[in-house]
Image (cartoon, rainbow, N blue to C red; front, side, top):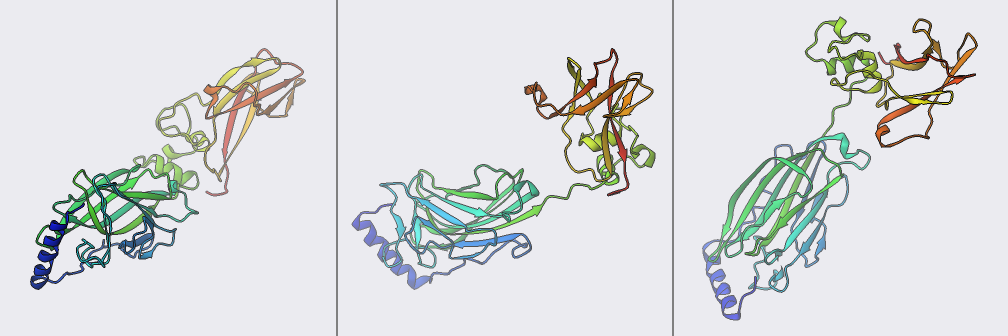
Length: 358
């Protein structure tokens, strides 16, 4: 915000008179979430004590990276950095510097919140707590947002910190939660309105909640998939409590969800002496289950790949040719028959329970 010389002189006189009535009080740091300092948390305070438009925090406890603030001032209306050596500047509650952003100006604060070795997909939820000290009247308070995140449980409380003759310093206490995270940092944006905005300081706390470890082993998987099923027989490896046509063991091995229905194998065609079929790509580790392809000409006698019966041998492999968009997410398998493809050839994926990991 810009003032003419007469207005500036008036502000200086009023501020001097106010100083006789109420000395400035620095209330920054007077509040924090109850989880501040716990495991998986960060804390950073930006006081903007220099005119640098890209700056780090004055104090920080962030083991995951370097927080940074980028200040964008709306020119030519925005005054810019408020120098505490200027007696007419609005340099903050502690008079150590502030940013007059002008209409539409902003401060973007990028905060790492998770260890680089832990992907964001390993985070179930992120808690954000921000305290923004800003000047109100004639400027408006800035709007707080975190672009790119689906925010939940947003709460904002505005507290009077320090009045003066013209306006007042206010504290915005802003909290939110986010899930479905895809990056290891986020950007908290303070956006000035058309009335301009003056920001004195920003304090940010974060806490991430690690995602629960996926169940290991068939028993843990079945318990998680069927929490309401108490009959052990219905949770057995060969059981099909939903009547989906796909037994539990096969769902477990392929990583299918509860809604999956049969058949698990899909015929993709025949060519020369090959039968092509597919199934969903195997996802996840199954330490207590093993799978193998088998073939038969009569649905009675089943043979492993490479096995011979009545002069016929069938091998299984994974061709890449012939893939098309419909195969995305599926594993193509070829049953290669020698010396030729018989009139009837049946294939199956056999999954057996092992002891490892159970």
